[in-house]
Image (cartoon, rainbow, N blue to C red; front, side):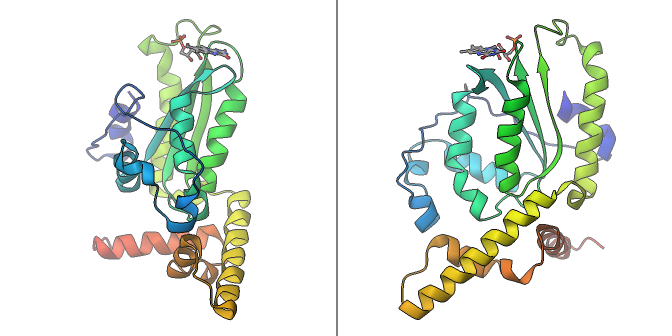
Length: 234
Ligand SMILES: Cc1cc2nc3c(=O)[nH]c(=O)nc-3n(C[C@H](O)[C@H](O)[C@H](O)COP(=O)(O)O)c2cc1C
């Protein structure tokens, strides 16, 4: 419904894909830490996570949803988040307009929204909207007319984020960006001094020149300029 309604907010055709736990096969992270050192997850070859990552990187927007199960996000949602954890060190989703929606019968909506939002924000997303619905408190939530006001809020925010992703980047995200940029720069220097092989994280932060930018907003601004130049958008 969000994707359908969003069309009228951004006046462009929208192609969207909905992936649910029922559509995908996902293994859990086994803590081998290859993603941190090599930038690759060995499990990607055996399940759908490689495909999910590709789609997330290519998408102009993300809409991440989970029900509350036993006080937290669902195991499927957590498997996705865990398998993406190393993206927190690479700003892989920098500036990606994103909304987070959690459904719950009656409790842990706020905590679960915060959990998911926080982690995605560390990956760099521009969090335009995040919220939850308690389906017991609002048993008629699934009726289309009852959703209308909420849909409007989500679509307005996502369209805003699409036009100006920098608007939704928070000071906390910028602080994390500078922290990792400095840390990996120190590691890079130590690696040179002691002639050690740099980790994938040091290589990526050097390649993406994180140290050059004073905050995440500047980094995203640069990414947007590059993208516009590639697509020859004036
Ligand atoms: C295994 C499981 C655990 C759940 N745990 C909670 C919970 O801890 N708190 C809660 O409020 N709802 C819980 N729920 C309810 C779901 O959050 C709820 O079914 C989902 O958000 C969709 O809402 P609906 O069933 O009204 O369509 C649980 C549901 C399942 C299947």
